[in-house]
Image (cartoon, rainbow, N blue to C red; front, side, top):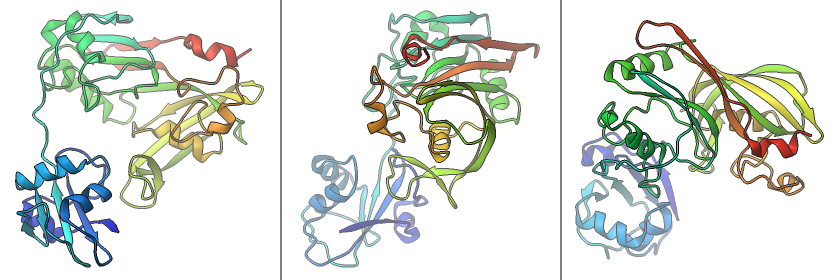
Length: 329
């Protein structure tokens, strides 16, 4: 068996802080061996480290990124013992330069500083493992080649994002000055106003309210987010019910913060999960709907921000997409 732990000594051996947050490239993962006869290093690590194949583990050992009890591991077949600590330094990838691709874009507004787009569900925002191209970034670069390099190689112009299966409004920076201005306002209370609309199962007990707590990586499942007591980030969602449609309710959410999966986690905490949400929802309830939702029914409905050049207030709305319609009759 293995337990993911925080191990400062192991981290020091690899030259970085050991963190127990989202498993991403560039982090250090530390595991404690529990039980005798755990077997060889590469096989054991592949069994306890989610997302790592045995061949990748072997490559990391060969490249010197795996430490056993604070010392760089030399051989993949090293036999582990009860109480051993294994630390994996996951090297960051060399960012690939996204290529322009002729992908249709629904451009709501554009000028010399910004582009506001209405992102469809199913479109990934920027290249990532498993999605090297075919993203919003690839489409934006085809539409606006001068965007390359604004704000970084891998995510040019991107100051915020939506989940792949969340639809709606996004603003993209076209200049370095716009990038800095938008980024500042996204981190400033009230600087950017984002309102979402979502169809949820059931109906909240009150007509409106606010959810405020900490959201962080779930201790039980590191691929999910959860409301936590420690090691989380403050998350605030103001919500109100704006319609009832049989077993579903249409809820409007104004968010003060933009944490990963924030609305989906907060609505689930109210006992009214987002319809079609495969991660935080109720699949049994989804199957009772006709048609069965093919994605989480969450839409970035409204976006307002001060223009990076001059500060005039810009406000946009996007109508609910067609896949909401069958449930709102």
